[in-house]
Image 1 (tube, rainbow, N blue to C red):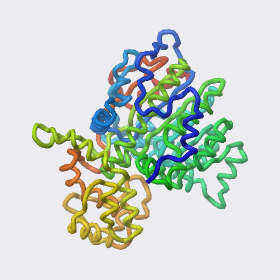
Image 2: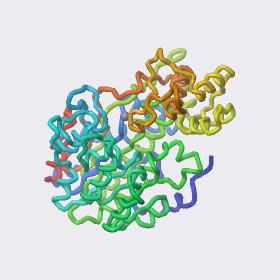
Image 3: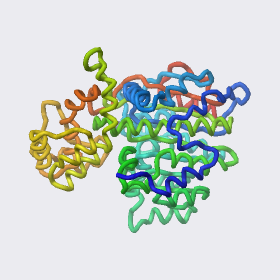
Image 4: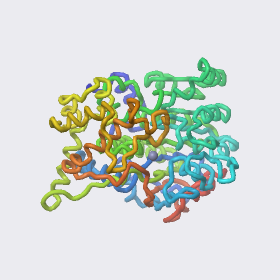
Length: 488
Ligand SMILES: [Zn+2]
């Protein structure tokens, strides 16, 4: 565990004009403009999305921010501003009250509700043109930035058509065929087909391919950019912040700043989706420390977006989430609920995701008491060590909670394989589940499930056309709103 590398610090200094260092800037407190009054159509769209953020998660992160930094989240500060318009969003999919990310992103991407698991393919099997294709036909540049695999459901929903969200090799090929100008995230494994032929085709088409932060900065102004910084999803923000082996992986805000520098040169404007994808994953695993750090990382992007829109008033900024996940809540604990405040200080002691800690235990083949104490701020008892060992031996199954050892986002190879193989998701899921009770006592945070939730979610808009935002909308109506704003 070390301080950030020199290259990262230098990069932060070199990005002129855009504040990427200040975690909670108030730079947009006053200079915000009411461009919708004079500029009727948006030239640029910045679409900032947290995947899987219920209001409980937002509120918890805001409590944490107030406790540790004496300031509310940028998200909350922004909601207060008179030129920012807010809406509640109904997130259902075609045939379920509870959407997955594929159906949610498709609703935004093509304006039609589809079945969970599909990318812009409707119930009759018809492919519907996604928003990026419409923007490209009007000469706009388009870009995707995410902390998940770049071929994952939410980015794909703006750019691709697929019967199944898990057909990520096809989605990668469509990115090439449709010439998505900028792609920054994880998922290198989906570009490594026969001797990396696909990557070669990207290069032949003029893309610069980068894999580490330094190369990203060096190539930031290349016309076409493909950045793949992990084989799968990027490591959690809490691990990128604390574990030295991940210091060469860019943060979401660093990728976002590069994307803006790159795309703003487009004569006819741009459409850029920036996704904080792993709030959702931390929600599925019920990992409190990880979810807060992901949310804080996303919150820094709000400053970047608003600063850019203040300088370029033809820019519409939309900030939202696709659904809730996990039912995260801070509950009242202790006398007059005062221990809930102290819970924020306990969360601060967490220095790694449960995924990171679990991987260390898997590598060792046994739990490490000191490691757990230093990364979670919790002392394991002999009973805990014994139970974790039984998980590592694939003997521990917690049926009474209905826990199913599967990763809902793919890697279907180890689904329900808990009795016969060393299943990573089985172990990580059980580890998180096991500590829920202790975590609740220490922090006041509890969860309703490991799944998505149906709650209404928040949405904000700032810039041209923002005043046309209705105070309540269904997710697919956002597509019309965005296309009208951009005149595409
Ligand atoms: Zn999810």
